[in-house]
Length: 362
Image (cartoon, rainbow, N blue to C red; front, side, top):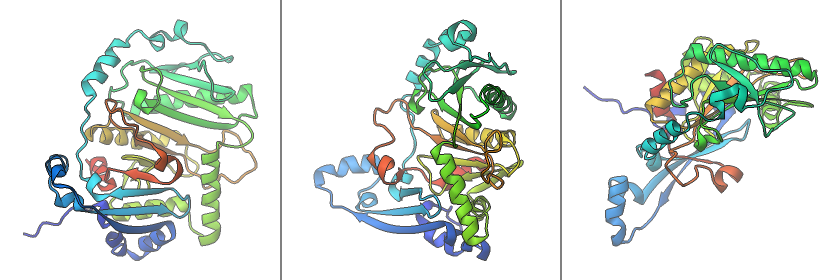
């Protein structure tokens, strides 16, 4: 019996040529994919160290690098075949557990007395309640504090649906207080590695005025320009390419994609359908978190991209609710996962989206 090697990002150029015609045409519209080989000559003194880290000297002498650029959003990623094969090891797991346990009793464990309230009061959900953020990003900036302290506790679809509904009620209360603040954004920075300043599990919500936050508004305009140019829907084409490559998995009404242009490691995009609200994403987000856990992810960021809470005169008709979830790395690692390349050029990625897709299917 002939064994078929699993797909990998290093083979993306070849994989794209073998897609069905419609998906291949969509990939041509969406992506520029190029590859190169990086070469080096190591001194003999380095060989033992190289073998220990990478398995062999030959593995590092020639390294295949695949560059993927989304031609619509101009988000891009550089995948190194060698880095993509490296196993993930969470060195700081024990220390993280001690830190979480030591933080029990923090202000979020006592929401009524340890956190301020918004001027319209608190919103109570089944598994969490809101507070007002004491150092605000925007005029209305709230926190949804989970009942459970531990940010590593598994969160399923039902709990996610409740949190999303509670956060939505907060946003609607903010809109009633300020009808001009119609643009709603939800974020989840899980643990300090992902930017959370308080360990206790929580999400954050903001509403803003004038126009949506720049990255959300940019994506809306880019998707409209794509439709005007090709008479095709950008998000549908994105799904078609990922599904054809084996990088897309359906979860109810949500479409879950292991991104070809991740902003950082193991980024997953959970796409809803135009006209749906974010509750339709709960199953896909839960599936993503479960996949991330199976891959050893303990710190992550999530963001929701949503149409405005009230009409603003612009075309949001084909803009689906969607979530982006990304691994932020080992909390025990002192090296930041984001540097000048990510800030000013393109993301450098050490994980293979095909392995992320395997975890999503499992």
